[in-house]
Amino acid sequence: MLYCTIPTKRVRESASLHLERACSALKPMTSPPPPRLFTLSDFDFHLPPELIAQTPATERSASRLLDGRADVPVDRIFKELPSLLLPGDLLVFNDTQVVPARLFGEKASGGQLELLVERVLPVAEDEPPHQVVAHMKVSKKPAVGSVLRMFSREGTSVVFEATLLGRWPDAEGPLFRLAFSDDPLALMRAHGHVPLPPYIERDKHSMSVEDVARYQTVFAKHPGAAAAPTAALHFDEALLSQLQDMGVQRASVTLHVGAGTFSPVKTENIAEHRMHSEWYSIPATTLQAIADCQARGGRVLAVGTTTVRTLESWARSGMTEGDTDIFITPGFQFQVVDVLITNFHLPKSSLLMLVAAFAGYEHMQALYDHAVKQAYRFFSYGDAMLLQSAAT
Image (cartoon, rainbow, N blue to C red):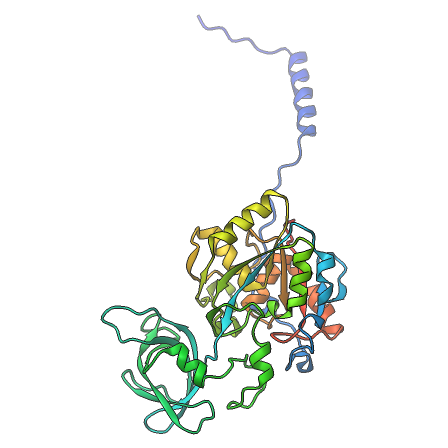
């Protein structure tokens, strides 16, 4: 027979009091607030045109450095960087080399055009040799199969031909695939122009000696970039030697920066943005240097957003070489980079979103406000920032 015992009133009151005390000791169960959804408008800001640097600083390391690691920014000079680093830290550079990727020519009709070579394609069987991928600026796009006549650097004579093969990376792609009549890198070296960003004003058929020397890092090694990794332009040989002498380690990656780096995001919903693709490579020695740095408790410092994109692409995919279209926006979880050295970026750009993801959106806003008020120089030939990861 099954018996059921009814609790007495005293027992029920005791149990109720015990439950009340236990519940009062518990923390209230609340859901975390949903992450903020950023839009394109969140990354717009007013920049006086006179703050866009048209020429580099007289000396590479004499540019200004906004130390934004703490809540209150500190105005410094870039050559002070060694005093802000520690022995055992690791600086990772992008050692890509900018090529004279801007070329001028004409269609068979005589219509003028401009090519900006984004990358040289590897040779493939059963394909025309000497293929490149390029942006094309022309009043009316030529038909597939058209032969373009390309000018000498001075624009006075036709020196080679380029056959239009189609769009890239697919039939609806924004870029064009062409076959040059000879080795693309040799032709660009002989007849191309420094691919300065569109906000730096130059005569289209002139290539100043200063730009050739200064729109290139002092350690550039692997040719293939259509734009410079600009944060690294502040380093000169004297500064690199000083860092080495104090025990700061150095490693390199390669990411061939494309002209797409200057393209603003155009969709108000930034999740709809289609990121441009760039080729990267990380040597085994750099992977070992990162592992050693982390093991000894040092900091991994990325010099430039291109280095960040390279390292974080590897961390996510495990691939040490290939194409990346990684799009880093607030909410991104950084796995490798602890500190970032970077220039000031364009409004509504993917690079500005990367900085906000790294340093924190509100902090990024405050730093940019400070930079404008203090008349820092902006963009490729401008000044630099030193940033700490918001996650550390």
